[in-house]
Amino acid sequence: MCLADPPPTSYLILNDWKSSNETGPKIGPFLFSWNNSIEYSQKLTKFDHGTFKVDRSCSVVFNGQMMLFGGFYNPTRYGKITGCGIENIGKGIPKLGVKFGPS
Image (cartoon, rainbow, N blue to C red; front, side, top):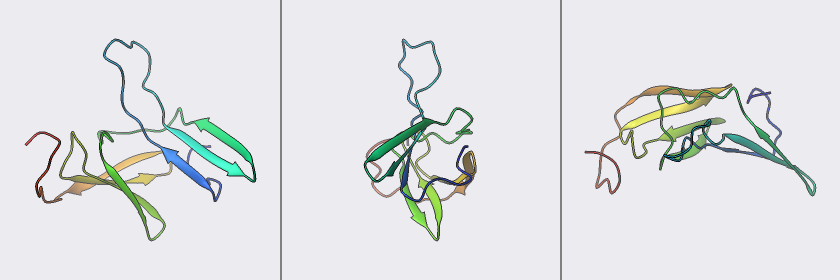
């Protein structure tokens, strides 16, 4: 399973950080879910970040679709979560007093 049919109470944790001295794969992403008091977690090994870097980006679920906005490495870009990855939608977020990220 990637994200085709996640449990109703679930959280997608995205991470593309990798320690500079780490030689292995990146950490995450993970899907966390709960059923009553039982917690489940699954590393999504086939999830594809594409070229979208999630470092310091924001997300929102709008009309049932999870959207990603900005971030340290892509302050004006936005994307959406697809079945098993991130699809870049485009650029155009205005840079209004960006505190982090390249100019």
